[in-house]
Image 1 (spheres, helix red, strand yellow):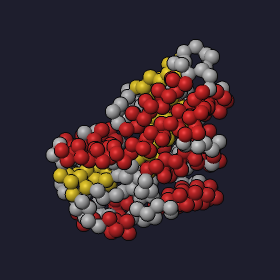
Image 2: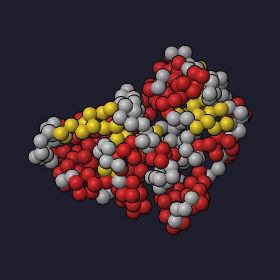
Image 3: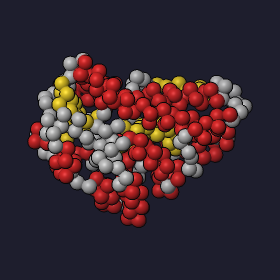
Image 4: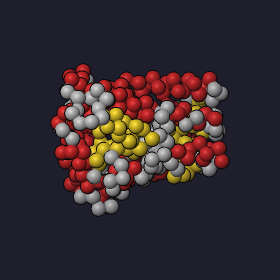
Length: 339
């Protein structure tokens, strides 16, 4: 099922339109329309609509109006909806395999590497496929998350400044890294970051510059730094397992795959520019940017995240051979990067 993300994929767009009547497909989306994922999902939807002469169009329900991020996979699995965007990290106990590249910090320096690897593994690795089949979903579009940095209510210039800070966290792995750095992790959803900073529940949040801009965090966190907490694969546009694996015709699947490849190309090209523009806009809006002085200290302090994932999953009951193979696949890809 390996596919090429490149110009060759475009030839699939000449597939004839679907013969069925025009269909509007509802997509549950937990994020705002103006965010990076929202814009790329619309690129995907436009490609599908164009390739089907409008026979297959998508209607997005933004900002959790059709289901929260931690509900959407279950809604698809249980037959309430057929399409939705969520992140495997929201389902850490149910989707540990596909969650490795999404919910684990300090592995990748480049989002492109993470999202390409996630796409490859999701379409070809038997352990990923078994997890999706069990959950009743299939990933039709992968996103990437550029490196997370810190947006804080006070300056953070070095590792020592992180000591005692309450930093927004999620999942099982970021809290371990933050605790190793002396910070206090506070579990909080993306949607709650603004209010958490505004109310003083947290001192900092850890997201990309572009995500921070989308959520207007410059209004409540005036001190940003470039400490690198790692890039990762991102949210995923899912459909049902049965749609992709038998429910759709070969023509429909080809159209969706080609639209996905086009959208991923577009996202990879724009990721770095989006972050740079978001940081500049935040500074223009009054944010104080503080270069982080000792990234090496941070990198040396946090534990081996892939090994931590491996050990936790075995403790939680994942077959050791599966954990070994998945960890090795991700480690091999991350080893090609120098952060």
